[in-house]
Image (cartoon, rainbow, N blue to C red; front, side):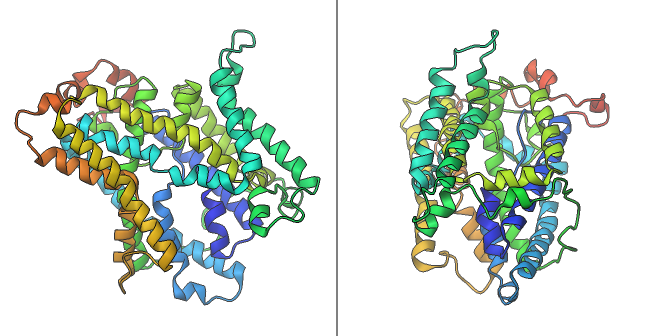
Amino acid sequence: MIPTMLVPLMGGNAHDKAMVVQTVLLVTGINTMLQTLFGTRLPTIIGGSYAFVIPVISVISDPSLMRIADDHTRFKMTMRAIQGALIISSCIQIILGYSQLWGVCSRFFSPLGMVPVIALAGFGLFERGFPVIGKCVEIDLPMLVLFVALSQYLKHVQVRHFPILERFSVLISIALVWVYAHILTVSGAYKHSSPLTQVNCRTDRANLITTAPWISIPYPLQWGAPTFSADHSFGMMSAVLVSLIESTGAFMAAARLASATPPPPPFVLSRALDGRENVGLLGSTRIGSRRVIQISAGFMIFFSILGRFGALFASIPFTLFATIYCVLFGYVGAVGLSYMQFTNMNSMRNLFIIGISLFLGISIPEYFFRFTISAQHSPAHTRAGWFNDLINTIFSSPPTVGFIISVVLDNTLEVRNRAKDRGMPWWARFRTFRGDSRNEEFYNLPFNLNRFFPPS
């Protein structure tokens, strides 16, 4: 969905989008393999983050790039500027990871404070759910019904004692509905539809699949050497901080769904600072195996070199993925709410903190979104582009807003003698490596690397 959203804004065509999809697939596969081996070791896929969309759009809107007349040249120059900003901003993640500063900050976390963060990591993406489905309801509504039917009502159907419909509900649903959408396309159902409907519903993209090369290997600097700008880099750093908070909530949800230790110990949070692609899928398929994710990463790397595979993904109506989001991110949000069982919900203090954090966590980003749509610019609109990106990125992220409000209130409002109400007795034993017997099983590094990188 991210390439579908951003590549046209850069001036890229359908082939450029297919190449970006291939590149994202390759990098996602490599990052996922590294994360499951040396990072948190949780069964999570490290993919693109929506936290970076706002600063990336800011780069796209740079006047120096918008003045480029040729669309393909503008696409390449924009990609180079985005790469440079990402390279610089990634230094923040490296510093926070190796210094374990984020692990130190986690001492201020509690089950009460994490409820809004994890819940909003799922529910906060509601704009990418049914509002997108409504753009092609004749395809996406059957998709939603089929996915729920396969994953929930028919999950006990087995083939040779294997729950095939539950495990492969996503793949089966997308394949069947994509074929259905293709039939509608070739039969001329959208011939007289509006351009917007055709973009959202049609599966043919100017013969993209048939004209794409069979082998197309993404490689470093394929769009040219990255260009660096302080303004772009500082703006991108705000997305790094937002991604850090969002992924912390996602990792805590993943640990719970994968039957690891909820929450992961602080030193584990410092080993990987991004990723939430498949957290909801852990709940839907009930597969929490690290090995499965590693094999999936291998498939991603393999298929990323097949040009027609990237073109195939580019031809799938992106609204289908919004249908999947409705279920999968619903799982993530529900896991966040489940943390309330470890707190005292008869406490008016706790009810106030969770209520205001959830409400403002949805309300403030919604204000930023509606203001941007009506005024054609974000609420922070000064001459300092990096400052605009900082404010707009942070306050457009529901988990980040919820995190700021819940953690500040939880650590300043009537804290004395409230440890039990906040859920700290249950939480405290997960803060040290020896606090839970499952830590060694789930989080020990492979190849006996714990000798060189001992848990702290």
